[in-house]
Image (cartoon, rainbow, N blue to C red; front, side):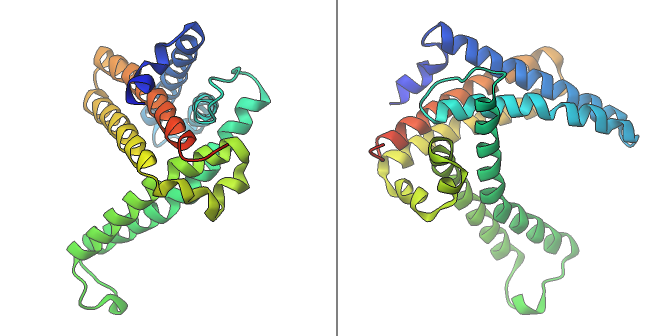
Length: 226
C-alpha cells in the first residue's frame, strides 16, 4: 500500500502530467500570494490574493480526483470545480473546531487571563486540549473528504462517513499520509525565503500531497466496500 502510493505520482504518463499540473497550480498560487504580501497594507493586494484562489481550487480539485480513486480529472471542467468545492467544504467544517480552539487557547496564553468558568485549569492543560482537538480533526478530515468526493458533500458530513476511521488500515494510511504532508510543509517553511530551494520544496510538496491522497484513497477503499 505504501509503495504503491509513493509510486502513484509517476506511475504513468497521465499521473506524471497530473502531478506536474499540481506543481504548476501551487507555483502560481504561491507567486500570487507572495505578490499580495509585498503589497500589504495597500488594498491592491486583494487582486493577486483573489487570483490565487483559482490555482488553489484547481489543486484541490485534482487531489479530490485522486481521493475519489478516479485519478486526476481534466483541469478546466465543472467536475474539477465540484471536487474542489467538496474538498474545501469538508475541510472548512472539520478544521473549524481546531482553529477556534487554537485561537482561544492562544488568546488565553497571551493575555494570561483564564475565564472564571475555567478556574483551576492551567494554560498547559488548555494547550493539551487544543492539541488533542487538532489531532482528532486532522484524523477525521481525510476519511470524510474521501467520502465527500465520492458521494457528495452531505455524505462526507454525516456520521456514517467516519466509520472507516476506526479501521487499522485507515490509521496506517493516515499516519503515512500525515508524515508526507507534514514533511513537505516543513521543507516549504524552511526554504520559503530562497528561490531555488523553495521551488524544490514546492515540487516535493506537490508530490507529497498526491502520494498522500493516493494512500488515503487506498486505505479507505480497503475499509469500505464501495
